[in-house]
Image 1 (cartoon, one colour):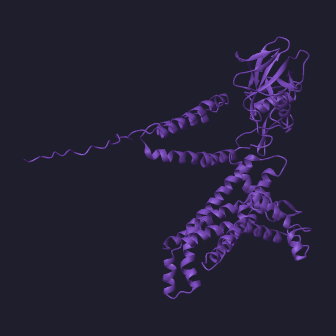
Image 2: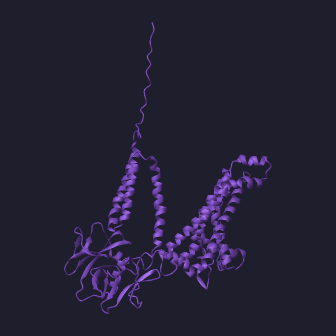
Length: 535
């Protein structure tokens, strides 16, 4: 009797459904939380952007939110999930600052020109205004939709005679919002606004503060200005005509129109007399760039400082690389005992913050009690001579830079295949020949991009100059250019070394330095192509 054995096909394992399969709860929760935080942030910043009429920023912000939602809320566009964060951070941290710096370089923005023309007009009217017999007086509170220190600010006013309440900005007077709270003749709360304390108002109203000179225009020749913790309406003899862009002094009949003086404009009469020393921010095109190449103060020193800048960067990178390479080769020898200890000691300068190192080394060069003069028994003014000061700068930068080069060279040496050295040894190459023909070319392949990056860093190494020598020594005939000034420290002094900061001009200089650094780096990268053939 025979028995027939029936075989059953193995049970099929459940396959994930197409399009991503089963959804795991934790990644889904992270995705929902991330998109929720981004959406909440967008909702949070929308009212301030609308209040400031920053429509471009508002559109870009919500566009980014929509892009993130479209990419991460679906299971499609998988490559975009990896590319979008990098592109967004590149745009935010690199592209946007470059574009904004260039845009700022086409303006005269700086001390005395931080306000728009409309605000300057209001302040000129206010500066000539006086209090009439029937001038209105107000209780005053100040609020902001932004930060306490930067604004924008709004005056919340209650007429002491009529009790009428208003909200005043530098654009004019408006009725108080209906949801505001008025208590005992004062505005105590306005939804969406942070109310400033009396201490904050007093601090921000000091000379140079953002509330100093803040006025609310109420007519062609009248403004409301703060007087302590109250406000009063003032009448001005100056009348501004927007159609002709001119001021008329009703007392004398003189007419004042805008006239450009350098990178600023002032209201002046037919004889050139200024109505006020106040100017305003405006676009000046490429005037800042023209100044860089035509200003005698800059052009007469530019070539010499540029040459020293290149020499400083080359010497800093070259010497630190050579010292780091020698130490790395020495400590990479298997016969060397205590390698870990020596390597740890050599990395100590790299572990100390650069700011502290530069300040300490600055004291080493002191003529009276500096370390070098104490050790050598001399009385040398190291930072008083251009030649000695430049040697001091390069020596200090060598101390700060060689640990980094030692670190990267050690890594590159350990990555060189030992088989190549053995083959060269079998072929009869000496130790130095092996290093010159085999090891060194392979090390250069690995560290060449880092050398280019280090050159770019030292080309604009502001801290090394400013903290050590402040650009000096200076000659009596030319106090603007010092013996150790590199381009960035020289132009910093031109833009910020005077009583008035010239931020627009400094931005133009930054753009020029960015282009110079980029061109030099491109030339260096082109020169490193010869290393591509090293196998």
